[in-house]
Length: 341
Ligand code: SF4
Image (cartoon, rainbow, N blue to C red; front, side, top):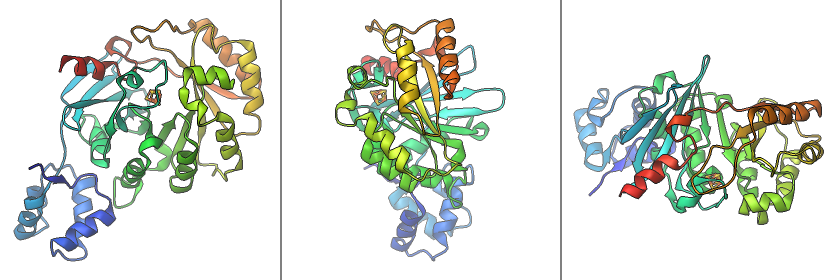
């Protein structure tokens, strides 16, 4: 039978583990040190625990790291890793090096139930929620682990649809007893689930990115069915009425689709609905997905859209496209792997 994994447990969970194994009170902190501050791979290597304690732990637990099953490297240095989770499902993790930073894009679910029409992961359907072990293993088990400066929860799945596990992962990433990362280096990206956003703002200090993709409700609903039950106007009200700390960045993600959401009317409406919110917009080029006739505007049109928004006072950036030669659109690589099995 498969053993439980220690890696991915919070300090409170480790306290419960040590109590059950008759270990002293300070052992939970020692365990957290071995799991999140040292680069070991087995319980056997936890040398400040007695042999008896290590044997007792090993009877019930594995350390809990697992290597990616495949990787692909782009000419621009971007790497995509494929991890096996949930007994033969696959998730993708992207490592994106830049001059002054190295970002990891992690998945929070295998597949996704949100059904955004432009998304390959959405087409896979929902296959399961990832545990903190599976979320954090993506970060800890890649060769570039020590080079990472930023993490974005923007891979497969909707993080706020798996909020308890994502919050535990953030706790481990940002706590003193955990990896000790600053919340300012972590961004959680959501399609915009009202209940989840409220809870996230209460319980986490990490940055929040919200996928908008259109300032018109009907058009947004055609692109993102979630709009029907989670109107973006309510999301904006939540943001406006929340006491957002200045350290926390709120951004809106906006994938540009040629002839659909890239007109001057869209610029005008975006400026109107975001008026009074301290935020920025990230424009994203659409990466082609097989079987879809959506296309991205060209670079000139994207720059024009950005300038128009900037001139309305909305800080707007264009996300650089990376990894185009290794299935850049999220969900493509894992779909290829699923189709093989
Ligand atoms: S864009 Fe995000 S929320 Fe929408 S289907 Fe894809 S993974 Fe799910």
